[in-house]
Length: 117
Image (cartoon, rainbow, N blue to C red; front, side):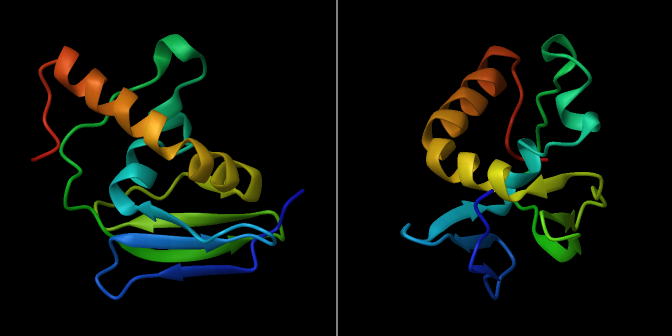
């Protein structure tokens, strides 16, 4: 298990910087974290149940709560609080953020949805 050395939320609460040993810090937007939340509400219980979450351009990180020594629960200002972001999930998300973001934008377009409320 790779454990981060630092988790830092920006002053405007729209960016989480995650630092892992031997890696450059990874910047993850609150919007990306929210729409890729590992919660069942977003991911469902199978790939067919996964939800495309629209309208989160302006979402912010309200707070973060440690979960044991393996994860963090990120609470967003829209009330979403059921995603437990493991260190390995954050690590993967940091490395795959461009591909995941492009896939998300493609899903929004295909479904006629918007990043805005």
